[in-house]
Image (cartoon, rainbow, N blue to C red):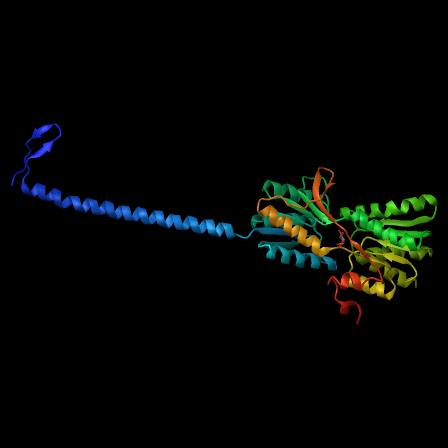
Amino acid sequence: MKRAVNSSKGVNNITHNDNEIEDVTMVTPICFDALKNKGIVIKDIVIALTWIMMIFVIVGCNTKPKVGFLMDSLEIERWNKDKALFIEKVQDLGGIPLVEVADSDADKQLQQAQKLIDEGVEVLVVVPVDLEKAGEIVKLAHQNYIPVISYDRLIKDCNLDYYISTDNINIGELQANYLTKISPIGNYILVSGPTSDYNAYLLHLGWMNVLQPLIDKGDVNIVLDEFSQFWLPDEAYRIVGNYLKENNDVDAIICGNDALASGAIAALKEHQKNGGVLLAGQDADIQAVRNIVAGDQTITIYKPIESLAFAAANAAIKISEGEAPSNMNITVNNGKRLVPAILLQASIVNSQNIKMTVIQEGYIGEKDIFN
Ligand code: GAL
């Protein structure tokens, strides 16, 4: 059979034989099927991609932020509390805490910072081993667009982002005020923490704010004023012990923390002077509170560790969500910039208020102190 095909240019009679026409009619549906199939494949891919994107969005929204916590050491009792409370709060707020402890080694702390950065933390909270060297951690973090919060101890001379601590000058004043109220005249020994920790300077500043007017009046005499190498008992044992070998006349000792105070007690005991010399420490360690009950230590300082850890965790999570932490209530000069900060208040623990303070707040169990 022959058939005429219209061309657009006019009527051309083109002749095909039946087979040719049959071929065309047979081929055409196959092409459509192929296209249709192709269409289904594309549609499937589009649907699949949409799902994948949705899953990414959902998973993305639910990705828990990683918060790095670089600690100096856990040797002193209080830091174990800081650690546990910080972890608890970060988890409560939906984050993943990653904690490293540097064992008092500043170089190790820098390596640990790199490790946490590699593990994908979005913010670093740092208890610096060394006030100056930790500036390297801040630099490294900033190269990776990670903000840094200095925890309890200030990192000096760098572009630190935030600082969360207690008012350490005020703590020094609380200690010195308490002892000078009891003994406004007398020989005082000052045992500071290490110079690698800015808190040691701040406490000393607080002590001198109170003592200097009394020194000027001639009432108080500073018979020994030393910075230790570590915040540990042996240091104060050595410092106070050496003094007592040569001298007998001491009325009061102010120590940077309870570990130092316990070393001072050991030295005083060797000279049968424990209980006869006023003694201030800091941290409300269990042993220090026991020493207060025993009459060997006059006061300790109770820092609001829970509030400190919670404030840092809150700020860290806010930062990881791309927001600025809300309750920075002050700025502190770290030598390079005015760092937005939170400074909490500490309180005195003496033999009269142990139950009303550390025990009532659940910081120390009653059984740990009174059997
Ligand atoms: C200081 C801190 C003290 C004490 C000390 C030893 O920085 O202010 O409370 O814990 O470290 O770790």
